[in-house]
Amino acid sequence: MITFLISLAALVVGYMLYGRVVERVFGPDDRPTPALRKADGIDYIVLPGWRIFMIQFLNIAGTGPIFGAIMGMWFGPAAYLWIVFGCIFGGAVHDYISGMLSLRNDGEGLAELTGRYLGPTARKFLIVFTMMMMVLVGAFFVYCPAIILSGIWGDRMMWVFIIFAYYIATTMMPIDKVIGRVYPLFAISMLFMVVALGVVLCIKHPALPEVWDGLGNWGIAKLGLKQPLFPALFVTIACGAVSGFHATQSPMMARCMKSEHQGRPVFYGAMITEGVVALVWATISSYFFFYEGWREVCPPEVVAKFEGQSALSLIQFFDAPTVVNIVCASWLGTFGSVLALLGIVAAPITTGGSSFRTARLILSEAFGLKQNSMHSRLLLSLPVFAVGIALLAWQIGNPSGFGTVWQYVAWGTQVMAAITLWMCTVYLRQEKKCFWLTLIPAIFMTMVVTSFLFVSPTIMGLDYSLSLMLSSALTLLAILRFATSSHKK
Picture (tube, rainbow, N blue to C red):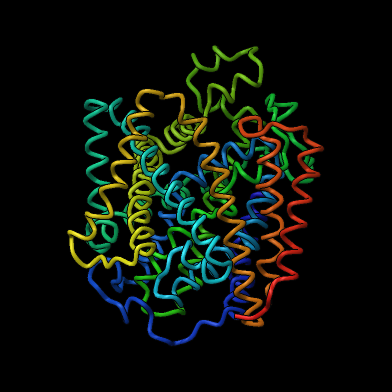
């Protein structure tokens, strides 16, 4: 419990101190923002600062800092260090500088920004890669919520049609009509849930693993995990520490800000808030799995069922959504069950809707098409929806395929994070600013994504030592490429 409280304080102090350092390095000023210069009533609209923060938080969070943190803590207390240091020095810096670069460049998306600083080849790659990621996220966040909702009321396919209709509305309508009104309410609900659970944690004050109890892979001995702590932990906990998905969402809010000085609370602050969410759920997971907290929150018949069973059976039965449902219902009562439903259903739905909208914006930038008319938005959205429907049909026919595909999506978000950090590093060097702020996390994330590529059994499945050697060589090549590239703009 001491580690949890120290980590919580560290995130707050990190925002207050390191967040201000990063802000001063970038140097926001009073120039007119895209929302003022390019106002179109569709994507470029000035929104209140608190609303922008809530939308940004929900866009980048979804279920990521909940499910990822629960599964990440299976590796042990080392997850605390990744959430805290990854969030303060990696994820929040990544989000702030990439978001501010979008703000400085007419709200450009990740692919266009990458083209500015890493060249046309990188731009083309990011257009294809981010489009693929956005449509995958959007499509796969239709069926899972539909399954849950159909268990409460109605038919599964009915909910599929309703959710997809909502996606069409969020993609096509002006940002202040649906996203600007609905998302803040869901964000407030999620924040209330996290605060309530944090209070219950402090009241219960349960015995918990601390970082000084050992930073090795606890999951091997205690839960039967097969994956190595590095790099699996750093891919499992993405949204709660570092995630390239955030850089695809920030341009939406960059087009709604009236001042560059809103950048630190919106971009850096939303990431720190997401880190708090991850911290609370990682701590709950720690108690649930390592100190038999599951016995406290499960019905007696479930406890009896798992008496004498292996630890591995726990993580196979109590997956992340199940843990959320059980803990919220037990600790927060009926109201907690409602909040859990919002977390498991509303969060992925809102994330999916934002993903389809982002896909439309990526295409509009790639082809230089204005989005003022409904006809132009429909023209770009139709192929996105068509691919999404095809993927959705595949998922309905192959329900077990979600878990396999999602591993690639999780890795893909970290690939985007590494590219984004390199892009930010090139920008800072060109501006003769302290590029070490992003260079160090860029190097680390390059090592993470390349080693996971080699060692993951679902990708290449190479020997662990060989994987580390190959990833070290590729990371060194990236460093040499950066060191020998031109410093000119």
